[in-house]
Image (cartoon, rainbow, N blue to C red; front, side, top):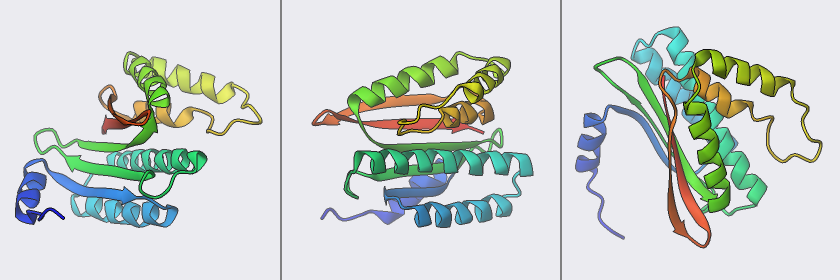
Length: 181
């Protein structure tokens, strides 16, 4: 195993104002524990209560989506891992919630297209899209949610969502999503 330079990692995290970072298999209980730590960090940081709620909600939505996707795919822990980072920008006081995971490339391309479409909408259009999606009937055999989560993340974000897709191997890619709160 390669020797870790923890000091360099620490310095990098401090420069980037990273409050929380996780990489590995993610379970329901781990999502909850990290969520509790995130709440404590936000409280210690004296975050605006509304912003803190939004940061927490976006973290929960992103991590639950990752867990759900891996579960539906019946992936092993190594494949089902997530990388989650929450950082604070001192210049404007906003928070950046980022998450990434392995995904089938075709699913990733479709998700990137959805994210890019949402990024072009303003707040009023996002609200209308959310209401429209809320009224749509859900398919009985659907393996995913009602499609509200991504729209809700976009609504909570103060900037358009940013996403990228990196091809890995075997028809899979790594998708990264960031929201600025």
